[in-house]
Length: 492
Image (cartoon, rainbow, N blue to C red; front, side, top):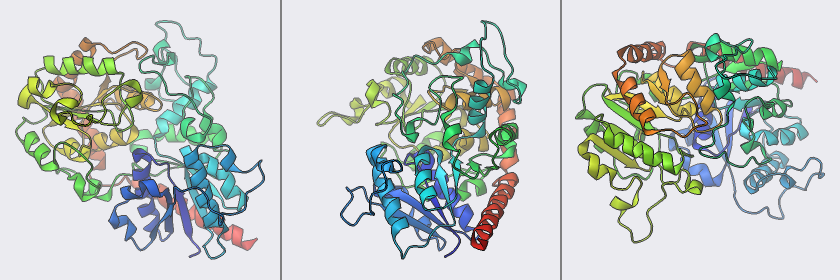
């Protein structure tokens, strides 16, 4: 098929899900979408996507390269010598697919920003590629603007506007302080760890990484981030398309009703079922429940988890707290129960559920986030402001208590609290450890603020008719761009 587009996602959940949705959107425009993924994460791909007539899943084996692998390239261009083992396996798989004389050469490649090292492979085979940002435009715009505005010699009490960005995103000295808790993970050299600058004001690493690409797709829309999309487009000198939020089609069609995650996402291991969660939420008053989740990758420092547990115990508000078994293990955070231990007592925070009774529901492991956010009893979201979580809650009209941990989450939190005005920051200075009173004050302020709730509902109403019209137009424009480039290439 002459109009194949290969999608190269990063392997994290927050990258795979948007990539899957992008495949569907491209397929609906009569492109053959081929998603190239590691066999280790292939179980995340639902059968409905595998059965789609215009979507293929090309699984790359996680085994060492065999004698049948493509011949090695010159060291100067060989990605296997310079990247993480996982990247090496993906690289070998890509080389195999592209080297196969019977395989169809893709018209274009869509490469997750965290997989930008694959640009050199596609360039070697003369296949044009675009970069795909699964996060929003605000974080990229803020990184570029803070770097462009150097020197940022801001004094205490001063507010500095960033030229080209909305006044609401003006920065203070606290924006320049890198949080000490928890420590930032080591910055490795391969693309997966360099998406965000080590320090505010550093040159954004992605700026160099997108140089080989023909344009940029961003997982956002004009209704949420128009000035930031425009800013990025104006400053990188390449076309930019806001093609999101890339959430499941069923999410957009179910506005105003409770969504059941098991319909679209493989049910993961958890100590409670979707039905039990739904029944628990049904017993709580409208808009009364605080939902707490820091995503699947990490969380606050262990000491801050303990402070959060104390704050929730002291509060009178009902809550759902999702405690991930694999989040933050390197910092001594909650892990899976030890062999032979009592699973009811093994999870962190120890015995909090017994102390709060039916007022709290602690989910250990996977949680049906879309169900919780769409339930009328949910009144607020204590969130790290990862981009997927942010757009899911915005689309359901749930206001935020923002507790960012790292990377783009700080910009997302500021976008939510300052620009969209549908949430509060849990602290004005994230270089200091979060205190119990920060949490208790934030919870009360959020759940008692009716104006905030109304603003969140008003913003969500922009999506009541489904997937954003600006993103439909951007995907159409991207399709036209690819076809025109394809015609130009074939003419030569």
